[in-house]
Length: 190
Ligand code: 5GP
Image 1 (cartoon, rainbow, N blue to C red):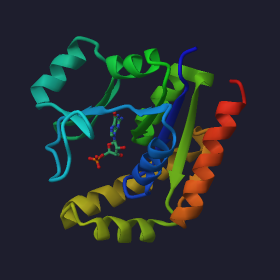
Image 2: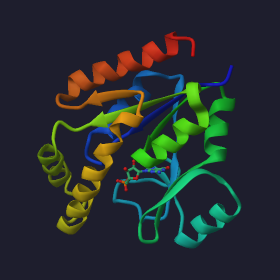
Image 3: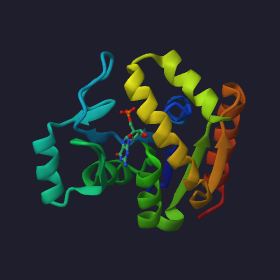
Image 4: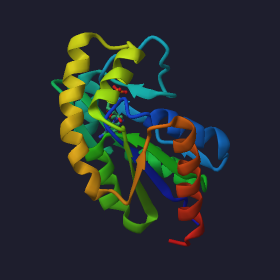
């Protein structure tokens, strides 16, 4: 049987990456769908683990060759996308796929896979809290943070399109809830 798909989407800074990493470390049958991007790596990021880092031209070439399940130009010349080959590789190994993608990408993947996929919307308690988290992470400069806040306000409007909403107010609680959501979907025989 082919693996199921778990889509985690949220404005960046909502804590979805922490939740995804937790699920990966506690569930050996799960594998992370490594996205492709044309943004440069942050200091601790590795090619092939965090992202496949491509130049804008390489990314555009793959779009032309129809290699993406979904892709977006999130900022000018900054592309993000899910490669079809990545998802197929993981599912053919019989593993469940976890996606950490933005809300638009998440909706597109859900549409494609229907009941085989569970789309989870990770929600920060408030926009103010989101700002604090982005500032604390401090991998981005002030202008980038402001752009992300404006984007987050738009992204929060996508909540009704998701199967489940996971509010990340207290991380420990959120991780427990995430475990439960995943086990329920695996047990539901979708
Ligand atoms: P970051 O640059 O902080 O790693 O990610 C920026 C945004 O791009 C995040 O919201 C992240 O979830 C999203 N993203 C990462 N991979 C993909 C992808 O494959 N497709 C789409 N649509 N968005 C992605």
